[in-house]
Image 1 (tube, one colour):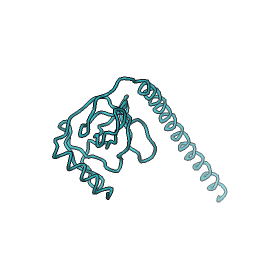
Image 2 (cartoon, rainbow, N blue to C red):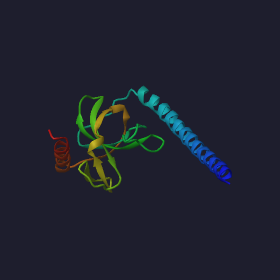
Image 3 (cartoon, rainbow, N blue to C red):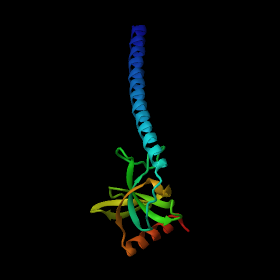
Image 4 (cartoon, rainbow, N blue to C red):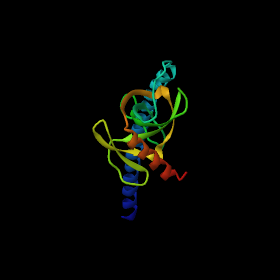
Amino acid sequence: MLHERLKKYEMDLLVWYGNIFSWYHANMLKEMLSLLDWLRFKLFLRAKNSKVLFNEGEIWWCNVGINIGSEIFGKGIEFARPVLVLKKFTTWSFFGIPLTSRRKEGDWYVPITCDGVEGSIILNQARNFDARRLAERIEILKNADFREIKQAFIDFYGS
């Protein structure tokens, strides 16, 4: 009797592991296809030679791409999301902060309304971007709003 129950348990485990294995491979395949799509689009971006005229305080659709773990990523076929240009370094690079279209709570979020959508600036996802990632300007922030976001950034990072 115990032997039969152990056999059944063993078979149930095999089925369970088989399902996990199938799920894992299906998800890995989807992720690989997304990575290939991003790679194809990234090659297009790298070949882009036209200069994009942008300034601090502007919010742009930015081809953020696919990233790793908790790093924010873009969505859709162009892997894009709104990004605020916090600091322009050169005509080809800037320090930007991604936005989300949801209002979120926490020290690293600053509420914002962008293009009529209430969302949040995600301070802990700020990073350097190449200007070739910029796709389309969404809006220019009012000076007071931009100063408030810059101050929130300084307060968050403590410098």
